[in-house]
Image 1: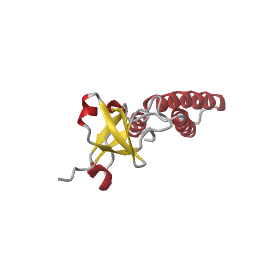
Image 2 (image 1 turned 30 degrees about the vertical axis):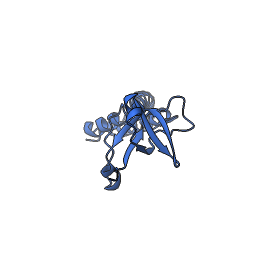
Image 3 (image 1 turned 90 degrees about the vertical axis):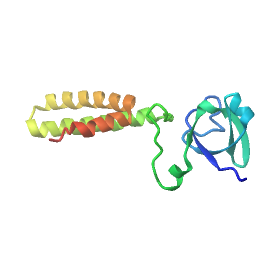
Image 4 (image 1 turned 180 degrees about the vertical axis):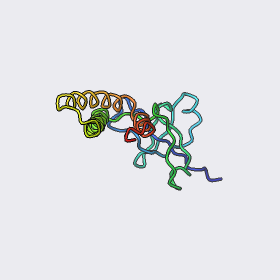
Length: 146
């Protein structure tokens, strides 16, 4: 009987950054002995290796082939190097854009506008860096443009 292919996505790689890529999808092999020890046999470039099972999340093959998104919680997705800086920058830009839009709506002074933009840039940048997707979904619900 042919065994079904199983897939995992890498969510941690401490000490193995060279050999394991975060967010990469790997095929696994069944290994009952390894699973008893909390390990997982992962195939990478035609070789199989043992890694801690906690470093991976099993995914359904249907999630791969029919275009559905992988449903991982924010805590399961690893934060890549430099990602917090990018998140901060995007949040800061959104804060400045909202500050400028408030300036046009309220016709505030230049000093008030600069303070408002800097304040919103810092607050939005930190919120985006810390909360990621949750911040952006909150921002969409808030509907600041009304």
